[in-house]
Length: 225
Image (cartoon, rainbow, N blue to C red; front, side):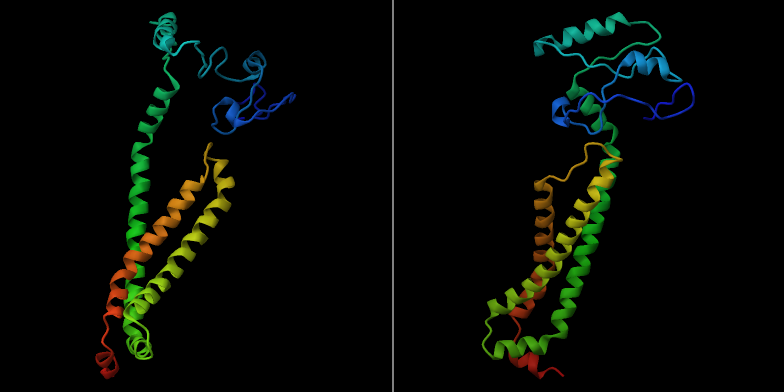
């Protein structure tokens, strides 16, 4: 617990009488339910105050009137309250991390662009260095389509294997990260999107080299020193 007791210790002693899952209380990670009088009496600071309180209404249409009534109780006091719905609270939190979210997206986009450029350069160089080998394949009966698919397969091997390794590493590190950021998870849709990006990078980076290899003239390629 981050709250320090009067004796200066951050360690608290509790008697566990039951457990519950995140779904019972709307998710959100680590939670404990304790006796407030015990907590309030033992803590070093903030005695007699609370951070937030949850209020449930029987009718959603009563949410606004009830919120206004609660706020009027503490109006013009030293501890005015601000009552709002869970949705409004979530929207405020999203707005607070909006800049951070933009920064993360910008960094990921830059990394993706650099990765795309690196793989495309590698594929172009690979095809250029094996021009004569590709010509031999065409000579022994490989069609333009077969050569095209061969180059694509190479790009798919690199991108999908790298993507799968990265997703596996992220999944393994998730329990550690979840201790710092509550509610952090890796749903299956995220894994699917990650593999989808790997496929997209493979297609974009290998499209031009594969097309070049498919249109390669055997006579011209074999004539080159």
